[in-house]
Image (cartoon, rainbow, N blue to C red; front, side, top):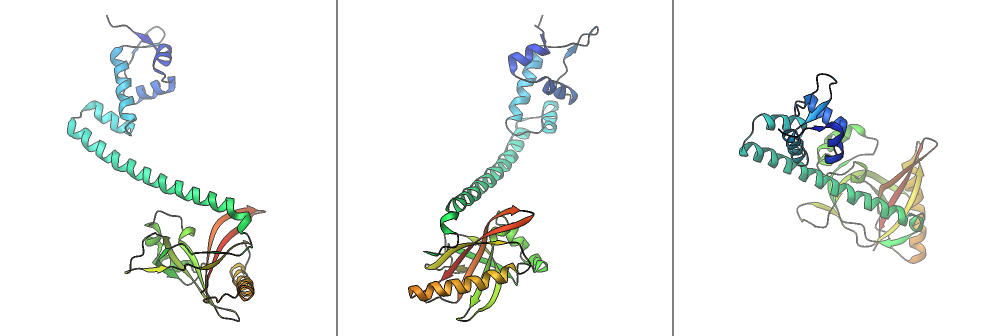
Length: 264
């Protein structure tokens, strides 16, 4: 006669929970014997084997519904089909996780360097960006329809793909538009790239307000012109601004904006 085990014994021996056993039973994956007098469940070695089989497939990403189907009827080809699909799904999850990890690390690095960069000019190259499209302004929401497919294809958040491109002359800002970009390390001659090896670099902060961008551009124009005159630099009349971090206080967003101003 096969030895029988009580629920409490399985909890101890196998590390499963009572809720897990009940769930498997509800889904028809387990059919323990029940004592008619007290309704206590008892499990034999075949039930235990089934628990291990369920765990085997769960650890390979199979859903309860898929395991139900497998336990009813399956062959090697069925298993191969399911495993291949799970492999592709897991590959996507891993890739997305790696991208997210990279974005987290970039945000951490920016955050740690913030105190030394805030409102201070240094010299840095503009990272290499490929230009994938443009819209006339950040608030021109209706134009995003033309670039949303491009933005969704880059596995990045929307803000990180938007750079404000600013033009200016000696006296004032002359124009602005939003470029849709993605960072890259390869300069393909068939694409349009932003590549400036020498830039004035700073980080500024702006609290959400009605005319935030105009204030920012005029202020950066004044400060960068003053810095360039003092240090004998010839600015190229272009600037690039991108939001890198957002905090909140009293329901207002404070954006930390990275500024690159190319010079010769």
